[in-house]
Every structure is written in structure tokens, then in C-alpha cells.
Image (cartoon, one colour):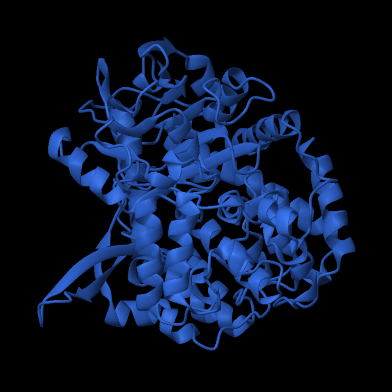
Length: 582
């Protein structure tokens, strides 16, 4: 690590006292790089055992990495916290400008504790932290909050605005935090944790500069990485169609969860596909800071004015595969424009779209099976494909109108524990299902991943390439452990997972050399395992148990793209994975 690199500076915020302090922690960054590695260690240090995730003592930690500002696609910020949704490890990554803003403000990690007595806005710039009264913003939706803050924040292009919506204020356990309008700390309820702290928004800006340890090697390494990124076909597809390109192949494969995973192909998939959106609705492409790929796709949704002919309001709405699955096939919406209407509403309220879609899918099936009636739904009759009904349910959920909607606001695990239907409540470790019913590797990832996310070890990708049911549980578990360990290095460098084929151990080692870190590829491999085990140390401390994991019966009954999955196969894989991370 370059001596006195500002990366080593950890900014501690106490919202209760409205104080801040800086500690220099080269010990953290020299041993754990940054991002997930450093944030995991800080979470263990700062989070009291067994703490209520919504209490003032529960910390929120944001961290960036040593390659941020130096290399392309090292532009994520990692957030670690105790999740109010699962009661365990909360981890979420967001692109946009927050990472470069923190780095240019001279901060490697941010630790937020305490709780304000009134809604507050936290403003961070080099050498200054301010706490501003945000009572006038409380209750505003995400879009309105962003517009209000952009008016006063200045430094357009250099600053980042992270904010929450009404869902976070009302402590919906899967509320998200939105950054730069179109990027999200989406999963596991960071929005609710910020809401409990009465922290409406964070504005970060900076204009610092960065040093390199070896200029010539830096230029050579940068050029090599840049050329690979801009010439790789797998990244070009993310620019052209985005992850929405996955809808049609997964549908054809029989792996697209449909009607709450009662089916694996959707008869209207074509009209929610990336191709349909690109041809008819794509308005713009955007990129995160320091990314040449520009994978963020914005649809331009035109809505006619009721009282003026030929006049339309145009709204830009970001979309990707997971959102199209959860608010499309999963709830039977077969028209992209209708999915976008739902997305826009969910985004403005500050909900995680994936969990919301799975919650609506469970509620619809529960209603159709008679587990809940119009008494619980307050007169609404949820049914597949009914956009207007779902819009009303989303509003009722955020308003917490009655016990049923309060239960939906805690996710399908909790709602099904109250009303029945656990066998079709699609959550893993308490986190709602990602959009892949590809085979056993995907579901082992959802079960074993530290975040219970498809991104943890990417089992869906292995299912798509190989006959995974022909492998042994031992082979699958070991493969996923190696992959999840590798991804700890990426997320500690805060490199976007889309660039995982570019930043292998060799390239990451060389890039780190240019910024003063001397770690061989083998040392990085060992470090990835170490970071994963730190995360599992937190999970186990907070009560996580592989043995107690619920496997939704629906994933065993509905045939996956690789065939019917035996429960014993998954249980054996879990047992082996538990040994690997211990």
C-alpha cells in the first residue's frame, strides 16, 4: 500500500451525537484490501452480538477499494450491515458514483452508528462533515428527494447522493437505498436500517488525486485491462441489451421462474425480453463512473396526459433481467410497458424490486388457494397479470395498512409463517429468490452464499454450461466455494462482477502492484477464502445454521432445466459447504 494513501482513512459518524472522527487503519486495508474485506472486519468490530438491526447500535459500513479511481470497472461501493430482513449478514453493492466520490473525498470506509432524533441529511466532503435538518424531505419519494437535493448539492458529476424513500422510513425490511437515481443498494434492507437512523440521504463529494507506485507499469496494466474490457464479447452484450438479454435463453431453457415458479417458461416472454425493450422502449444507456461498458439501460415510458391530446409525459426507468423476471414472469405480467409501470412505482417508494415481485407472487398464489381472502387484502383480488391490483397492493404494503400488509412488508418467509403456504414461499436464508431455476448449482448458491444471492457464487452459470446433476454434491460444493472465494477478491477491490473474466488473480495481482500492494495470485486466492470465512464468522455468531436452512418445496417439485432436484442432493451439498467455510 502506498504510504499515507487516503484509502486508509475510516470516517466514523455518530448520528446520535452528530459527531465525526477519522481513524487511520492501514492495518485493515493492507491485510484485507478494501470493499467487502475491510467492511466485513469493521462489521465484526462495530456490530454488537445479537443487536437489533434497527437499533442505534447497529452500524452501517460503506467501503471502497485500492483500485477505485485507478482502473476501469472498480466502481462499486460495498455496504455491510446487519439485515433487518434476514436478521443476519446484510451485504449490498451499488455502482454509480458513490465509490469514486468516497475515494476523492479521501475516505476508504465509512462507519455510521447512532440514530438522529429528527430526519437528517449527512454531507461529506474533504475535511468537512455536516449534519443538516431533513424534516422537509421526510415522506418524499425517491425521485422527489433526488431532485430537491440536486438543487442544493452542486458539484454535478463529482458527487454522489444516496437516499431512501417511504419504504425505508417505514422500516419495510427489504427497503433499498438508491444512488444516482438508477443504481441501488438493493437487497437485504439497507434502506430500513438508514430509515431507523432517521438518515434520509447522504451526499458525498471530493476532488482529490491519487498516486501510483509505478507509473509505467500502471499505464501498461491499465491499457491491457481497458482493451480487454472493450473487446470482450460477453461485456459487449451487457452494453447492447443489458442483462435483459437473459430472458429469452432462460425461457427456452425452461429455467425462467413463472407464476411463482409453478412453471419455468412464460408464454409472453417475448414481450418482456431485452430485445423487445431495446427495439421499442430503450431511451438511453448510462455507465457507472470509470466504466466503458455502459450496461445501465433506461426505458423511455410515455404516458398520455388525460386532458391534452397528443401530449405525453416521458419517464426514464432502468431495467435489467432480475427486475423483468420478478415483476414480469413471476407475477404473470406479459407486457414490458406494464412491468415498467410497476418498476417505476417500486423505485420511487424505495423497495427492493426482486423481493417485492416474489412477495406479490406468493400473495397471489396464497389468495388463489384461499389462504388469504379479500378481508386480508382489503377488497383486492390479486391475480396473475393484474397490474392495477399489484400497484394498489404495493401502496398498501408501504402504508402498512393492516396486519396482512405488515406481514408482506417483512417478506415471504414471515408472511407464510403467519398465513401458511411455506411450501411455495420462495426465499433462501430469508432472502427472496433470484430469477434462476437452472438446476442444483443455482439453488446451492442461493442457500450457501453469504448473501443468499445468485451473485455469491454464480451457480446458475454452471448449470447453464454443464450437467450439474451428474456431478456429486462434493464437486458442486467445492466449485461454488472456489467461486465465492474468488468473488471476495473482486468485491474487496470493488470490481464489478461483470468484469470477473478480466480481473483474474493474475491481473488483479498486477493491478495491485501498481498501487503499492504486493500480493501474488496464490496469496490473493488464500485471501479470498479468508474474507469469506470472516463473513461466515459473523453469520454463525448471529445465529445462522446450515442445518436449519429451509429448502422451499416448490423448487423440488417444479422440474428445473437440469431435471428434478433431489432434496438429499442439496442437503449433502450444504453439509460439505458448511465444512469448507468453517
